[in-house]
Image (tube, rainbow, N blue to C red; front, side, top):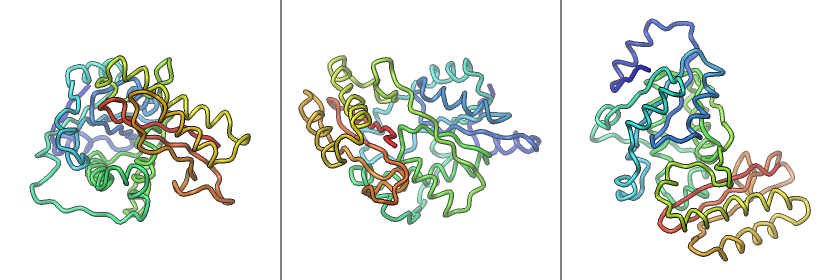
Length: 276
């Protein structure tokens, strides 16, 4: 696996790579099998796969959260090598950002719903860095996990608005055997928190299993009550919405998704499940 730390190195490498399909998996590191599943999916569709590891400062609302974000780079490199990834792009912050950059892209209400309400400004930071990474790597396809469902929608909107020549691929959530969605933040969970965090996937599965039996407000209420009764879990939101807009389900809705965010102890977790 080749490791590049500057945009110049990437550009130089791909100068002679005409005709190859380039797949891209952008990450913030602390890799787990969910990330590796994206690498594997990219390998099936592309000639060459680039993974980036960059802990992006502009998408953190809380400086302490940025500070404590796990950065096990040696373990990450070993995982990528074992997975057969072709290229790792691991730049310093100074390679990505100048000191006085301004960025804002109007994507409408999508930015302010759900995650946007609890993490204002977060998605502007996500779009800012993904835009930069797309312009550096110039991938044909980019692969993202369904766990960050709203993020995928945000990036899709950015690609549409900026007319970027990249196809986005959403890949299924990878779960532990007990149902917990794989996440880099899971390393912060105590044994107690981890056990109680299972209520999130249980609540989502309950909605899926009962869909069509009870109406949506009732399903939503039951899921919230279930999570709120779990020790050590602080619910932020549980919503059942239109999968294409994240707005309330209507007669025009083709897909439905349930999304949840909660704190297990001090660790914030998100999860979702496609219902229809």
